Image (cartoon, rainbow, N blue to C red):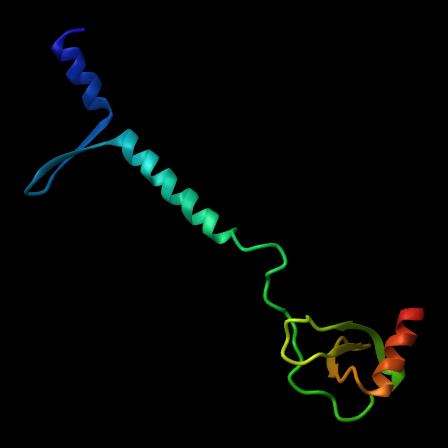
Length: 116
């Protein structure tokens, strides 16, 4: 291979810039470095352990009075990571209402909803 062929082959993978200073960058190295950075970023965003998602719904206050049972269509319990335990009742209109799981009427509604 002649000197001219070697220089042509070498220049095909180099990007040269001149802005006061001349410098060349091997494009293969740049592509590899960029791929490594992207892989590292993607790993960081998916490195959280399974089940470590923050709770999506927590109760900070409870409803003061019992809801009419006929208004309640479903329920779910708040995540154990929440500061206060809670039962969230879903009404016919789609409203979500926090209730204290220690109250008798809440326990009764949960039992009834489980049976249905």
